[in-house]
Length: 339
Image 1 (tube, rainbow, N blue to C red):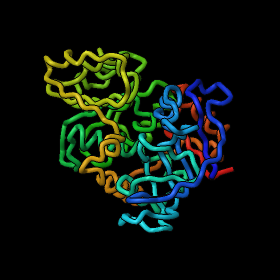
Image 2 (image 1 turned 90 degrees about the horizontal axis):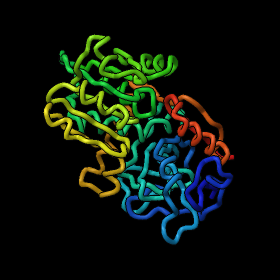
Image 3 (image 1 turned 180 degrees about the vertical axis):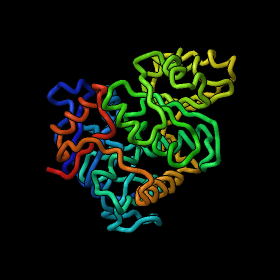
């Protein structure tokens, strides 16, 4: 089968940072699905692993990719949730080979039935970010879904990116929170507003001052999706006493003792945790993805696909990695079909 991988971690500018390869076709066992991959999207985790992660012991190549939509081709003997021919979407497990291959194995418990109203590319844009945003909002921060009147506020730092684009929608559509998104360029600010944010501020300026300017000197919940260490002093200043702070990135250092005076709680989100540790609630991601698919089909949530980068091959994937690393991506970059 066709796949895209690499033999050693290096900068995306290097000729063999990602290359077209051929691998044996995998076989579904246990609770695995064998999925015929139709579209994939690219996330920051892809670029981070490519820059530092080597192939697993005994493997010649490392295959990335943690977002896919496709068709179930075969199922393992213990599978109960899917049958061959089902259209599916998922983000997979960081502990296993990725989705940048024509055929891919994935545990059924972290797979959902794809939205009927989206094509494969539109669907591939959503799984990883939807899982991350949903788990952050409802599992980590403990926000109650529903539209009961509330004066609670949510600040999303980096709201125009992949996770921010879906988090903004989930928070505005499913909760009573006043949602404030940050973006630094006119086009990304317009994107965040289009996705439903009640207010948009510029994170290239002091965030606390920007919040005061729009009448919110303190906010109850803050989620930082990027450059947390750079914004941390502003976060400490802007968060309300007894507020909740969530993050997904990898700051070099973070002195959370600065939150002590305000009794702020800190919440990490990693959507791979359930699969990495085979947690008892691992099937929650299957249910979550099915629920998001229903919201999409009902017209409440839209795909965050921003750019189609052509067929799935090393050349196009390298372009996608370069864009993600530039920090200028808006929404999600997707590749579809195999050349």
